[in-house]
Image 1 (cartoon, rainbow, N blue to C red):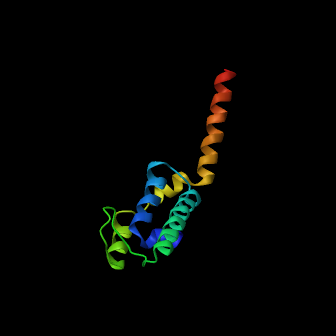
Image 2 (cartoon, helix red, strand yellow):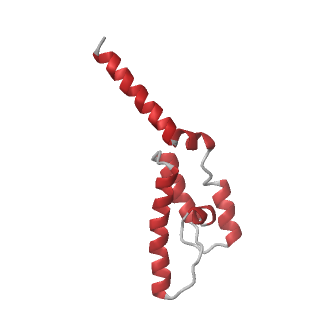
Image 3 (cartoon, rainbow, N blue to C red):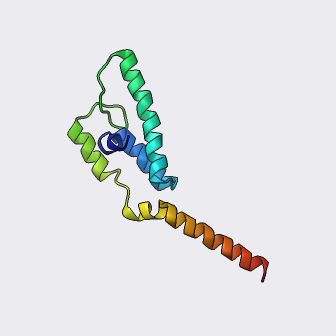
Length: 106
């Protein structure tokens, strides 16, 4: 799933949306990609057709076009990765807890 999101624009869009819009951690976003990938693999095997890369509108695209879209439109910025990191979220949660404690005892 981690490789799929780097090469398939549909998985890259899903990963990007989860990371940027919803603030999910990398592992959560990759697991979501994995479940979608499993569904797609099942459909491809069931219908006995080749795996085909498609853009977000459903049009067939080449590997190079898909990779280009993944690298240009769906790259997750480093600051978003830092923001979603477990350590950062834990520190923010501890800071909020401390602020609540101080407000209650002030």
